[in-house]
Image (cartoon, rainbow, N blue to C red):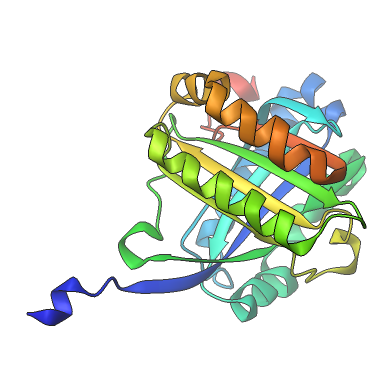
Amino acid sequence: MADRDVVSTAVAIEHPVFFNMEGLLQEPATEAMILQGLNDLVHNKHSSLFFLFAGSVLKSKGVPFTHALISRFPSKDKLQTYYTHAIGDIAKHMIPWLKNEFCVDYEVEMAREAITLNVNKDLVAYVIFIKAKSSAAELDIKNAMDAFLRLAELGYTIQLTCGENSYMRDWYRTMSHGFTAYFSSEAAMTTWENDPAVISVLEGTILPLAEAYAVASVKPFIHSMDATK
């Protein structure tokens, strides 16, 4: 009976990526092909992950981005295998359009039953990347991450995660920390964004630590025949 009182947890690697491919916004058929190609990575034989989705950015601030990919892996080794063997084919189609790319790969620990998300058309992710100032104390960054996670108590989110960039790729050294919130709908995200407690944490605690930052919200791309006409 005692075992039932023990929370079973697991470690995972959060892998949110921002892309600026603004030219694709005028090429809906190519955009649909690329976003579907990214979403199809979940089926790649070299992808071992908990979930993955790509889509257009609803809105961004700081450094601007137009598209994003959000995923979660069981380990750094699994993410490295994905980097080495899975992403290359679709990346070839993206490179001509790609003006900028940011990623923060960070480790999270959570209850095992929460580690896989149900990716559907209503899911929304809100992601903050910061490059912490050299003057930012480790304690201040820890306090900012703790304050972000406590926002779960407000009840708007499905899940909140945050962490320090593990810099698994050299060109992803732009940002040092990531913060991700998942919502069941865009309306829930908007309500959350406008809550004074959330504004206080995002604007008053997290962003003041940043030398630079990028914020983006994204919904999963759902293939439409209209997009390819």
